Image (cartoon, rainbow, N blue to C red; front, side, top):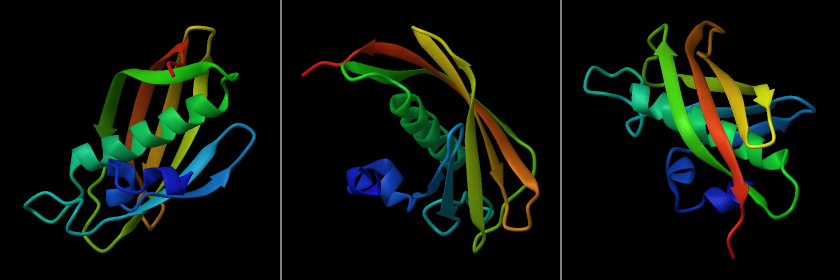
Length: 130
């Protein structure tokens, strides 16, 4: 999966898939100069990139050949600051696996285990184009 990231936003952000489970996907992302806002803490947009990346991958993994997942809506609640130098771990799980839509929730935790962000992604399940 990570080979497909090369040269795209997830690759540029250093997102690494750690584990693919039966009902979850886990990844990590460093928090460095690429990810922080001017005050030296994790930018909310970087958290959303991580959550949308995991939700999109997870959604795609559930689909039969010939179907594709595309993002419809993403939101994020930022609950605790993450400082530069930390590494966040994200776990994504399904909330709804429908025929035409799916909903995925991602929890992003700081290195000390504190919940930093909760995000939800809704994907549309569509026919893959060549």
